[in-house]
Image 1 (cartoon, rainbow, N blue to C red):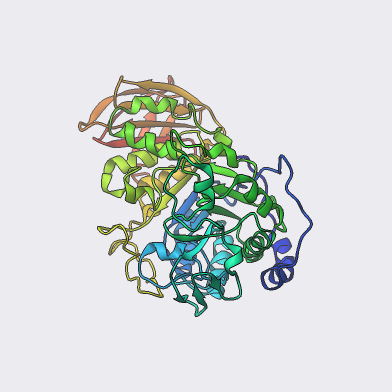
Image 2: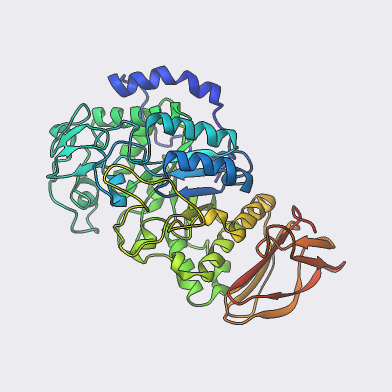
Length: 479
């Protein structure tokens, strides 16, 4: 992604009063979308641009992790689950069924959210919020949200009425029909009339409120189900229309709606990247050399090994792939395509199951080292490769070599070198690197530099690489 400085917190603070007015009174703005709106881009925050997706972590848990782990590890951002009031229920997907735009959910209160953002910022970590702007709760439902707001099929108290939803009242059945995909109901959820001036203003007010609390950017959930021009218009209504957006657009062959359509209001996630990782790590990783071919431009692509949807529906790898999953994340953080997001969720047998300890209105704080939380960000390999990513940023791939199958090696300029062994056998051999002579820490083997690799004056070193394992060295970690 293109990088630009963050909006200073002191400037964000001055937006609070106006954002509150927008939230409560829907103050109108005069901005209109242009044919080519300013590009949204992730700034480098703290050490770098790697995003950590802490799926279904409470705000208090995110705050503690930012201070103790995420900041020191060199992540630039955390992505948090949707911060708004939603329906009651222990399932994870209840977080994606809004009832109101109060920053009060089973993950925490508004005050806890604000404290989390401030704590992460102090640790050098920005916050990306998952934003649900396509829909509200499911049609035919009624009750009270987790913060007590009453709602029914066409009435979300103080927020929307029947006139604010699209006329199509049936579920999407044909994904080759653009109108149906973007104007009918996604799995029976009330589809917002995003072409409406009122709805656009209401959504912009919600996003402005989060920016005023210090949020640095947004993942736009279900963006594929909203016309790209509507999203451009919503963003133009924001106080800061240059704030970073990345769209969830699940492009698929034969469908009319593709990720490239949404580059007018932000970047897009490149789902084909995750699909190729799954295919190649289950086949031959020599093909990873061409992983960017035919995909979004690198500077506009958000990439990942898995997210909360794909790890459940089989579209991507997930934690159950074990060592191969770690290898794929090693590649993600070492290869210069797209802006990487590392996913950290929890183990599950029921794909609907909420986070460990979830009730109808709360989620237990995440606990690493015990229980079901995967805590990917604490794995030695991930922490080592986040630093690797930051150190080699901006350098080209050099010294690519593969054995025609599942052993590949490559350098990053004269700053780093990686070996990936996607075979069931240990590999012992010599490797030619672009690095200066010296002794280097193997950052995927140990966090304390207890495993080193010595490069001679001609760039060679000899090492043993474990089955389904990796080796990585860089100039920022010398023995």
